[in-house]
Image 1 (cartoon, helix red, strand yellow):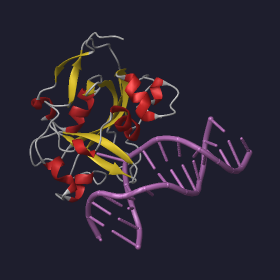
Image 2 (spheres, rainbow, N blue to C red):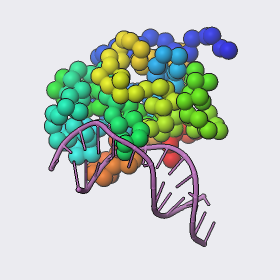
Image 3 (cartoon, rainbow, N blue to C red):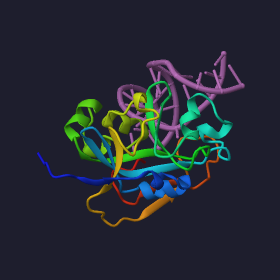
Length: 195
DNA sequence: CAATAGATCATCT
DNA sequence: GATGATCTATTGC
């Protein structure tokens, strides 16, 4: 049991009030915290909104995308393929629907709970190395859609110690439009980054 | 090891 | 009624 705190101050709202691709880069290395579970963000993708056909908000304001058009620093959780949930963080100011998809995490604390929720996973690095996996591992569900990430049960925090890392860039994964836009960011060499 | 099929449902046409 | 920001198990070299 390690009782030492693994993370520091909660990121304030202005952190998110910037272009989606800037926030996506800045989130790498930060610590996502939900109740007793904490994990380092090692892979993100930026979705730009009205100009980005791959983004949910591309078509405009609908009941589902309402959160994306709201204030920055909130969670957007949606169901994909009828089975898995994906976690996004809303970026950019009110009315500007940029967001950042969290694609992979490196477990930091509460790993026992993650293993329970994930079932027959062998290695720790496989607990949260994908968008659908990390929501299960962290216990994030659609009940958290619209939640304020600057205070409450789900937050993103500064790491206690920031090791140096290189940021890798590539096209986004699993989408059908704008396949060549380099909006995926990850910590180069980290074993928890998805393939 | 790489490729592929199947699971399963909220959202939008 | 079709589609999708996925994962896992299974099949085929």
